[in-house]
Image (cartoon, rainbow, N blue to C red; front, side, top):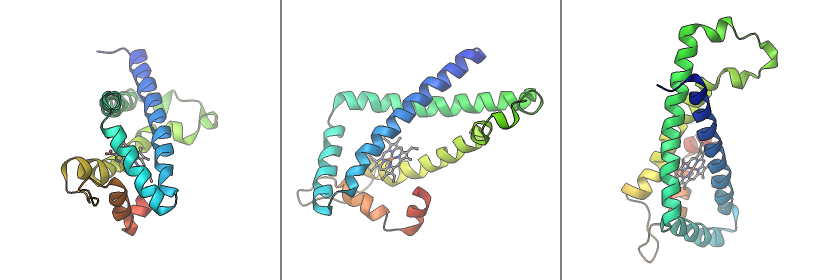
Amino acid sequence: MLSTLSKKMLMCLTGLFLAFFLLIHFLGNLQLFLPQEQAHLQFNAYSHFLAGNILIKIISYVLYASIILHALDGLVITLKNRMSGAVYESDHRGRASKWYSRNMGILGTLILIFLVIHFQNFWYVYKFGAPPLDERGNKDLYMLVIAVFQQWWYVLIYV
Ligand code: HEM
């Protein structure tokens, strides 16, 4: 079993990596705001480049492993804290700690639920489903994004 310190270290390293991924993901997604025709070409070219790159493939396995490890480790730490009553009895930080750092378990669970929906929307449909195809018969990720966000409830969830 990992010591409490190693568990927190794992949480910290996987969390940092996930935050770094999210920043890059956000910057990549900003291409969606280019004028429509350019966005269509550029976003698909970008996704084909990423899909064909071995280094990116390795990083994406590290990403999946980080999501799973971060969630499991967070669950173990939260349950252990609850069982020892530590959060309620020995957390005297009061207003010195922010509400979100005292409710990481709940916030993490919300993000996990979002990720299940998000993976189903894009990752699953693009890799294993029937995504839209462009005129050359290649998978069209841009049109998939457009199709998903034509449903208002997805816009609401993502916002
Ligand atoms: C409006 C916001 C977002 C848009 C338009 C968006 C778009 C996409 C798209 C199109 C993909 C599929 C890429 C592919 O399978 O090749 C993807 C994958 C992914 N997204 Fe997002 N995303 C958004 C927000 C988020 C957020 C907030 C998170 C994390 C909390 C996230 C995490 C991921 C992850 C982990 C993947 C899988 C990456 C991989 O397969 O390597 N995304 N996203």
